[in-house]
Length: 315
Image (cartoon, rainbow, N blue to C red; front, side, top):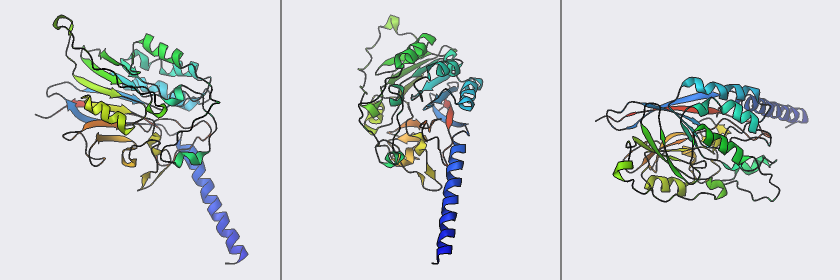
């Protein structure tokens, strides 16, 4: 190969790489709302619309993302589930309270993710390609986690940090919930079973049992399934964030298989498309809406929230 040919080839490769990076930066701002319909309620039950929000990684300067998050209340869900990693900056509390404010007027529940506890730091992006990219550091700066959680609780959202709770929908129906703190930081503790209420205090029977956690590690999904939940919500994976056509996600940043990096699946079905089969429970993993503030790139994996319409099973 001559010198001129080699230079031409290098220029072409460099140009393609630059174009790919430019597109990946653009795609990180192409927010979308995905939709699923899931037959999980008892026969005869009216549908329940759940908005799943995760991994915003919001920074004060992300105006486009802020407008999009604020607009999500316009979908009029019955329930909001927030699976964490809201913060993207040390000064993100005020914009988070602003853009999530309309959603907190709707019944909801939340857990926190690792990026809700400590401010982001610069990391080698190649580490993300490891099967589990956890890294212990002693230079982490705490975030105002409790201030955000307190605001959520005061608005009426259920705090599922290693807790069980119930929420009442506007139509009076009750959801039973169980959640855990972030497994990526080994903060997860499965709550003790709920004591059976006395008959006089039982109230309305729940129409559904939900499990909520940030990072979908296999041990946690198994615990929630064994607890008898009907549906599990998780985030953390960013859907792989940098995906390849046909191949899909390259990593999940936990021990979940790549086939379940995002979307609706059955757990622990033998295949990702074993949805809600016998012996498994429904699992929705959100690809999330954010990135690291240092690497605002997504490829073949648009930032998202998800509107899930839970419907009645067919007799």
